[in-house]
Image (cartoon, rainbow, N blue to C red; front, side, top):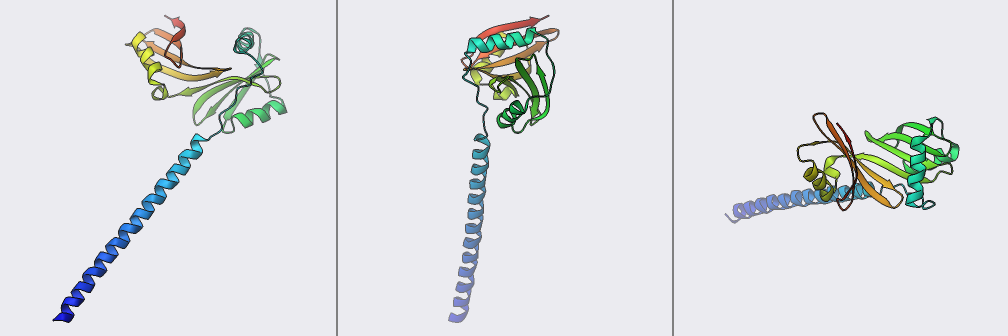
Length: 197
């Protein structure tokens, strides 16, 4: 009798041992997955953010961009120096189109199916860039400002703009035939509006 009982006990303890081994393996796989996920997210968050040149003040950048917008510019190929700087700043860029007025270069491109535009001077100094973002990526205070001022409008497109030392958002909202473009700072203050009716 004792042999049968001891065999049953041994079988039961082997089964418990196997269950513990399976739990331990599952736990180790889960830990490895979480660690891998942390590494991937860390790498994505460490992706290089382009650095705006400090050569110009915000006011000087505004003047350079305004001059670019009001002068004739044509499609061009960038200089080698400019192309290298651009590749450094936006290594994932695809479908690039360059324009210049012989002083400022504008390049439009895509990264992960999102529209970008960047402005450089002749020396490859990045003056500003804008990138298309999702409405959900807006800071809540910025989104609330737009929806408070234009409650029955829908978001059409949203851009994050980094110009000199400034960070702000360009938000295009629409309702029927009414289109409004808002420029809103990080604090949710509208500092410019453009309307099309």
